[in-house]
Length: 539
Image (cartoon, rainbow, N blue to C red; front, side, top):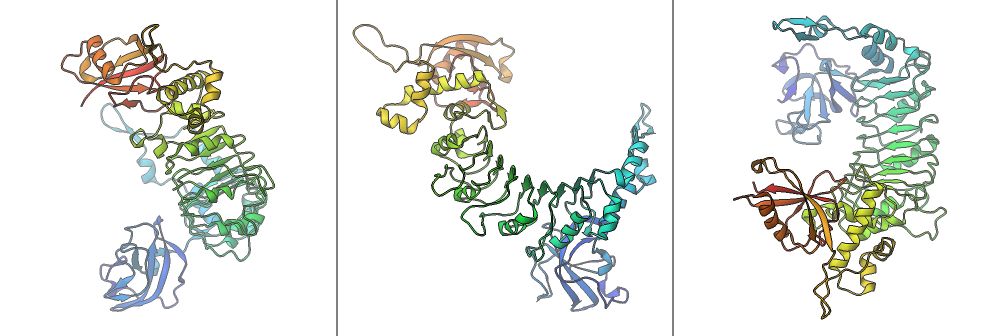
């Protein structure tokens, strides 16, 4: 049988404990391994083995040996084929009270073995013991619990609060508490903990498998920051907790497989009058309609939606709404989604205060999938001040807008109405920067006019076998193609038998852009004055 015990032969265990203290649904961790956490799924005998066994379904894949079955007998259904074990009760911990974990974390003295491991090697390869500067002063401070304002009790097996009065008298000043990775399973216990900590304003409950049933909503009036990452919480629970969190300012709900926002008594989420930051990263939301349900949260300043499945973005109509949609939103983070249309990008201009945007790792920003470079985003987004975590300087904005206008002029062959539809800011930017229509023209009065005059660019060799060559400043026609520029680089830098590869290095972009189409011109690629072209070599 696939079991976990201290004996190689489960049949030789001591007298079984008939009055097992474990129950189905209880959260436990393996003795001595507080990060090995699971849920009790079975308590009872196992055919062919004496005594009572505890069937545990572990949280992490690979922690078990089977799926809850043994010798073709199914005792319970586990999450996966290798997440379940049968364990003797003395190998499991049902958890400890909050203050016991506090003692363990802050008052347990370092063992001699731990202190012996703190050393450096001398020049003669001998161990020299190291003592942390101020160690005793720090230990003395954190051991005075009444002065603690912040405590981290992550992965210490906390499963119940203990006496609220004792908690309150022990930790009267505690403002921030990290209880991530413990065994807390119901909101009643969480409420008791908060009741015993009157100064508490920030609570992290990540990686606790909290029951979806909330029978008595706890009072969390003082909580300003609540972190519920990887807890399995769904929006219905958030709605139940709403009245218990009247002053919450930050709510973190990462990694909960959320697919929808489900308001209780309206088409949009109401309440949460002080909520400034909502973190919905690493979920499964695919429809922007779900996010629109958050548009009436009057104080909402930042929404984190990285690593979801969103396909597009649009700004909702005002009709039937009490407030201007997303009236306070200044930060919208949409990295690693499936957005591929520029209409979604253009719609971001309709958000009244939006100025910090993340669009990286979307198809619309992936050059390999037909996406556009950074300067196009900057030009199309009128109010954005920070893009993909990088601040946009006035100079970068000006250069990006000019490059964008020239790019549109070089490629547009449709009607003015079609240009306005595809490039909503084109006419505005063209007039603002005083740019004339510079498309190629021919006539009897003179030779063809160059598409954008001369462009001043810097050419910099970066290839390993090219040697150290000083950068070159060159003025080239905007009609110069990538293929022509490659030939010029071979001549400029005397690159014998080397086939150059060109990259455009842009301000604010973490990686340079490969210029791979030999037929495209500099103006078509948006290369402007003072641009830097990196000259590399084929591997």
